[in-house]
Length: 120
Image (cartoon, one colour):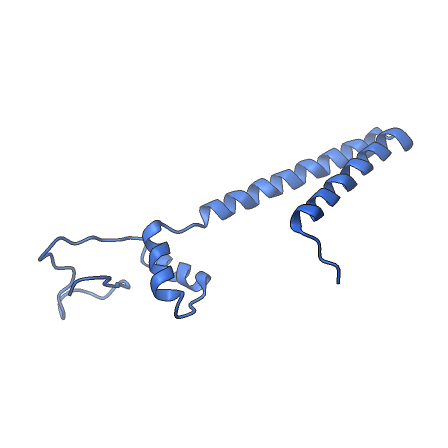
């Protein structure tokens, strides 16, 4: 199986698109071919913009990224599973002052997942 670097494949696709547009304009003399090719290019660019937006919005906060790398990655927890866990805790990080109590055994309701990173 022939495998090309990603940049070569993209350049090959760009050259193919350019050849299709030039053929449509000069050989077939068809404005419709050029317009359809242009429409295809616009749709591809919109799809690329959508993918970039989704990748950007799918990032974790710095605290959660560090927690994943130090705690979950060594245990081979899949990133998607970790993101679901983070989503359950509403992506909150609470920093407590010295002698501040977060929960009291037998009194505090258990309605969220909590993880103590340091302290007692």
